[in-house]
Every structure is written in C-alpha cells, then in structure tokens.
Image 1 (cartoon, rainbow, N blue to C red):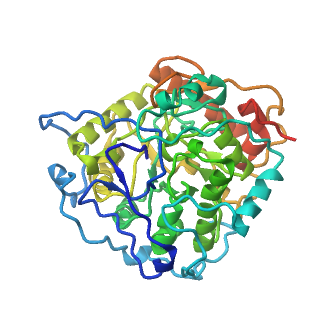
Image 2 (cartoon, rainbow, N blue to C red):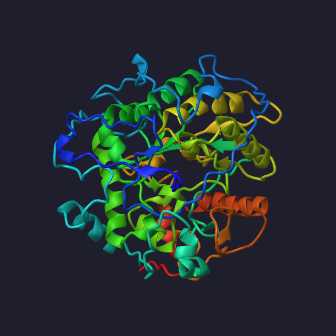
Length: 471
C-alpha cells in the first residue's frame, strides 16, 4: 500500500496485551493501522474522484455484494467476517503442499515478538542472527544512505536520491531490476494479490475465492499475522501463496540495514511459526525499494515482488474519502491497459479494510472472472510464474523446478534499470512511455523468472544490482 498523508498512524498495541487483544481495523475513521508514526515516504495524493456518479457496467457481480454506493468512508462497521467451516484450519492437518510439515498448533506467547506496528529493535538475539545470515550470504550490500522519512513529497525531500539513477529507487521514477517480479509472463494473465492483512474482513475474501476456486498471493504484515493467526493458517491451507510484507509497514528505504533485516526477519518468522513454512518472496510497502533494500532481501533469500507499472486500483483511498465508483473506473483502465501488454500483469489491491474487501469480492474479481472479450486468467503470482506452490517456501522448495541457478548470467557487470510509471520525481532508467516501460520490464522479469528462479535470484543479484556482488 502507498502511504497517503490523509491516513494517520495508529498507536501500536503493546505486546504484553496481545494475548487478549483483537487488533481492530475498523474503518469508521480514516486510520491506517499498518503505518507507525515513524513511517514515511512513497506518498502520492489521493487521485481526484469524479463528482458525479458514473454509469458502470459489469460482466458479473457477487449476488451478496454491498451496494457500490454504500462502500464509502462512512460505511457502517460490519460484523467481523466468519470463515466457512471448510476453511477453518486444524492444527496437525496436512497442508496442500508436497513436503510441507503438518500445520502447527500456535498460540502467542507474550514477549516473544516485537511490539505491534513498530519498527523492531535490532539488538535482540533473533535479529542479530538474521544480521549474521545477511553477512554470511555472500551478497555485498551497497553503501547507500537511508532516505529521510516524510509524509509528503519524498522525491523532493530526498532530491539527491531521486536524481541518483544508479540506486534504482522505485518510488521516484518506477525503476525496477531484472530480479524484481513485476508481471506474469503470459498475456492476459493476472497475478492476483492482496496487501496488508490478514484483517477482520479477509475471511469474506477467502469465502468468496473458495466459491469461485480462485487462488491469490497474500502479502502479509507480521503484526497482522500474529494478531489473526487463524486467518493466516486459513489462507495457507486453502492453497493461497503467502509472502512477506514487513512487520510494521514502513518505507524500507528510510530504515537502516539492520532495521530492514528486522522488519523482514520477524515477519518471515511469524509466518513460519504459524504455518510451518517460510516465504522466499517479499513486497516492499508502498513499493519503496532501491538497490540496498533489494540486496538485503536477496541476502535473506527473498525475491522482491512489486506490481506492473501504475496498476494500482486505488482501493486503499476509499477509507479516506475516495469514491468507490472511481475505484471501479481505475480498475477498468487497468484491464484496458493490460490488453496492450505482451505479458500478463500484477495489480495492487488490499484486504486490510472493510471497503477494499467489499470492492474486491463484490465487484472487481467477479467482473474480471466473467469477462470474455478478452478473457483474463486469474491466479496467484507463483502460479502465473509457472511455478508450483511448493517453490514459494524455503522448506518445500526442492531446487528442481526452482533451482539456484548455476547457468544464470555471470555475476559480473551491470544490468540496465527499467523505469515503470510509478511515483513522482526524477525518472531512473529508461524514459519509455507507460505501456512500453511496463511491457519491457515485464518481459525482462519473465525471462529472469524462468532462467534464474525465485530463490535463485540471489545467485544473479550482482547482475541485477550493479553495486551488489556475489563473493
């Protein structure tokens, strides 16, 4: 999710009270429950919504959908969604992934995780072990200064970083590297994903996707995972892909190396304890990534996943007043643009808010699934990369369908950065048009995904990140 200045930070609950606490994400106000007061950057103002109610047509909608005009900032708070019985995970059950351990029986132990929604301290034994993991990875982290955290205009406040095209800062110019997954290789294929959960409303989304037999990728915030472990287990056991989306949802380029490691490490650890498996992918909050963040993620065995160009539904703006009708129009534009690409695509959407889930399960997904001219194929991101779900986790990746590449491009030289239309400020890499940039970036990623593999990206990190070398 991109951080808007219109969205306020929520005070984190203390870890000592988590055992009985139920992290509320009700949206009667415009609170943003995954941003800490120190979170910053990667901001874009809410797009201007149309003043008149537009006439919209849908190939299909969910019969139980909330009326579109009621999905607003001031929508009445709905009851917490309830998982259907067939989606309730049972400890000890066998996951739908070859080689995965039985589903753990997990209960939170006070003091075993950092405080919710706060950047974790870096002096704990766990974080120190992850720092050693990075130091022992053979990946050299580029010496790049951390950006200044700011709620507005990060590209202006960090003008030197924005102008430095060699650091490939996505936020200011949309720069991506070959090792960033930003698309699906097959035309008209949508790698479905949802950020920032699990929330009180994710169950509604899971129930709907169970109805239509659709799989998604969930980018999990660690603080949300330990708050709702039953929902995380339900996602996993239903065959959805889980990926790391940090502990407290900060702008990663504003953190120190050690803080980035802590954010990624604690979320990976939470997912491992709750499900038994560790994701080998991550998505930077707000898409805020540069070569330093990339290198740290790669050193921890996590391939970055962003989204295609400016394919943002803007659903996250609705709790702060954005029109739900405009979200649908934005979504229509995304699908129209997707038909011009030679590859498939990935879209930014969220399961954090009541309103975003209502839009996804009620309108966006039913409409996309029912379209026939052209027909879109919807699936998780790991599936759209032609990989089995087992390749998405460290414990189940057998290095046969997803090997550490020994025949990848040699770890010397520098790969060209690719600019995709996202963020504001100085462009980095190519200055091609939006469609061409997204297509070129997607084509590169498709090739690398096939030749290098998800975890194999570590082996080719020096090719993708000029300053990062494999020792």
